[in-house]
Image (cartoon, rainbow, N blue to C red; front, side, top):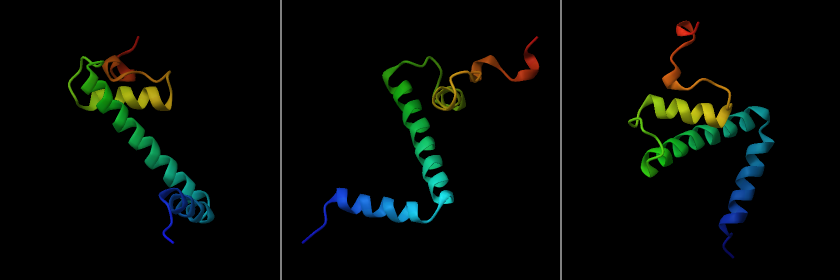
Length: 82
């Protein structure tokens, strides 16, 4: 009998969790990076971002996903604030 995708994924996930917290941190980092890239692509494709596809869109996506209070790319760096 062939295992379903759900069973294969559950087995893979369980073996990853058995490896310890470093495996969990790697999975969370990969999932976060994938979400940032996906969010940036959606913003550009659907036209919600006026900026060209580049570092500013990725930074805005990162700021939104990780922490909504982070400055946006267009705000400049911290040295330009008064």
